[in-house]
Amino acid sequence: MTKRNRPWGYNPNTVQSAGRELRPDTLAVRGALMRTGFQETSEALFLNSGFTYDFAEQAEASFAETEDHHLYSRFSNPTVQMFEERLALIEGAEAAHATGSGMSAMFASVACLVSSGDRVVASGAMFSSCYVVLTEILPRWGVEVEVVIDNTPEAWAKALSKKAKAVFIETPSNPLMEIVDIALVAELSHKAGALLIVDNVMASPVLQKPLELGADVVMYSATKHIDGQGRVLGGALLGSKEYIDQHLKPFTRHTGPSLSPFNAWVLLKSLETMSMRVHKMADSAFEVATAMSSHAAFKNVHHPFLDSHPSQALAKKQMLKGGTTLALELKSKEQAFNLMNRLEVIDISNNLGDSRSLITHPASSTHRRLDPETQARMGISPGTLRLSIGLEDPKDLIEDLLLALKG
Ligand SMILES: *Cc1c(COP(=O)(O)O)cnc(C)c1O
Image (cartoon, rainbow, N blue to C red; front, side, top):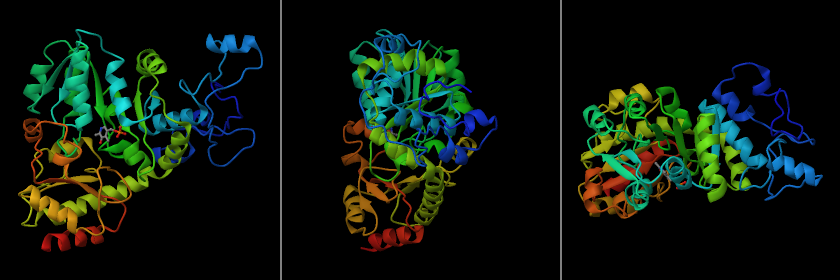
């Protein structure tokens, strides 16, 4: 048994030493549990910024990495480490690194790889802050970014016929649930010499496993389904040990987007219920999407598992369920605002993946930062609403929507 980074009475009766393949739901409550000498049941919260050393020689050896010892919570912390290791076990990744928000994970995922003159290729529909990082911030430092507007195999093959350093895709996309073929883009990325990074936020670790489909790095906003209860911000990146240790950590160690130990502790507990929550929310989202798809008020209802979705077959190939979010398209901003204002159960809020159902108007909130042409190209119209389904009884949500539509 390796004792690496487990100086406080690591319980050997856990997965790493059991020599058995435990399933993700078991790993979500048992994996990477690091108990102190007090043998507490639940994970300890190490709310400290620094660590002490018995001797100067121990500090020297710790910095030289010949001795295993936490140095400073900007680099590592036992509670954060438990969250990282548990998430890696659930995802089936070699290694994980947690960050203070989804956006700091997103930025670090690409920034740790690229230099001026390098080329990055990205999918065309995504969360607007990711789009701003890719198309406005990275180009300021001489990184060339090409956005693949038509999400077709031909367009991807063309964009990746030239060398690239990284490919960044979001699938399903926020908010219209557009699907990118992960296996295809992984193959093309590797031929172009690039690592494929997948923003897996909308699917969550429960419904889609990009690493199994050939992706190199998975990115999460832990704020969404991982917390899933509207409490804390967090982010995470998962991939090979080489990517995490050789590329990512040398970048984050000095730039400092660390996850707070308190948030890590909240997120650790959230991992225990994540699969249960996401499955129920995904089942309800499909039920609500199906009920709304036959309503005359909507021009379109976007949900990857509906027959009307253009990529339903691909979504069913790479996802277990169609996600917990849907997009509803009304004819105008006025109709969209009227519907939002008449809802009584569903809250108006721009978060998603929460236990409470939340509705937002992307054109004036989450995607406001994008110019109208980019919004239109992503399929976001003045009448588009994004609905994130929570843990309520789906019948109450359908009734809330139907009553609000009646006016
Ligand atoms: C919310 C979100 C992010 C950003 O995460 P934060 O935790 O808010 O920083 C990135 N990508 C997608 C798809 C998101 O929904």
